[in-house]
Amino acid sequence: MTTTVDVPRDTDRHSPTGRRWAGWAVATLEAESGRTADTHLHQVPLPPGWDVLLYLKDESSHPTGSLKHRLARSLFLYAVCNGWLDEDTPVIESSSGSTAISEAYFARLLGLPFIAVVPRNTSAEKIALIQRHGGTCHLVDDPTMADGESRRLAERLGGHYMDQFTYAERATDWRGNNNIAESIFTQLRHEPYPEPRWIIVGAGTGGTSATIGRYLRYRRHPTRLCVVDPENSAYFPSWDTQDPGYRTGRGSRIEGIGRPGVEPSFLPSVIDRMIQVPDAASIAAAEVFHRLTGFFAGPSTGTNLYGALRTVCEMRAAGESGSVVTLWCDQGERYTSSCFAPAWQRAQGLDVATYASLVEKAMTEGVWPDDLPATPSPHDLGVK
Image 1 (tube, rainbow, N blue to C red):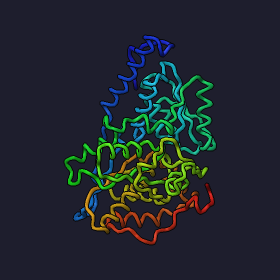
Image 2: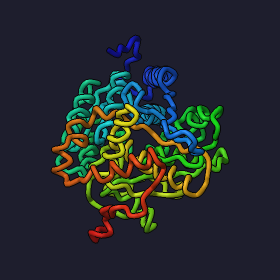
Image 3: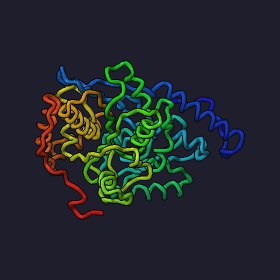
């Protein structure tokens, strides 16, 4: 259980005591960062003799079990240093689960009440984790209404709407300070290919891709950035058509990534390539990876793996050597009642088996087929 000792108390965040509380909060968050900031970088077991190495950055090993732990810490630091929080400020966030889990953890660390506005179809496992960390869940039927409901709640309660989709790209120091990009390159420095050819990530807020893309340019690395995107998400068609206002109006079935509209933190100018990944392929990749390696990752990690394996196969076909890095976003146990449940897959009409054979062939033979099933696209539906 988290304890808070000798916390300065004052209702005016601009008073000397309020400033002392802010100083205590920053010190508390920085101490937590020192304990938990770095995560393992696994080399994925591929057949011997391949001259392409695949690495998996294990963000599931954070105390709150996901990549969003870094984002939540950065958002709290940003809010404290901007003077948006005091000792009693309710914190509200719009989240499909993992960000809310991490923010609930940090809110409790600072002794603040936390409310997560989540879609009603969020997995039961994620809702339970938000509550376990002291948060309260406010359910909405329509995922596209979560942002507006969060703002209304913050106004009514006199709280602060953390708004990850606006502030993710600016709350993290993209120049370094042990952000995820700097951590990857530090851990690769003694590997055969210390500068990866590609880093593959998904986009929820867009903050992670923005941080990595900026860092690559700032440090003058030749590494290219690929963003993978699930069905129903606006990011891929927006990038493809160069239309920043593109909307699908549909929530993603792959929790944590994909958005019905382009969010302010999404920065397409730092992205070298995007791959649209069918939802069945995301789930298949996670399931095959679990069976072949024992690593049980969530479906958004499956999206990353699908894009990474495709990239590895393309490099092999082109006779290229080098390394590819992608992210393990969270644990698969959070989705046993949803994405990994056969009944759920059937209800969604997902042909996971077809993609499972494709992924297994890519992992064991390094071959990517030319005749892939078509990915359902908003273009095909006339959505704009």
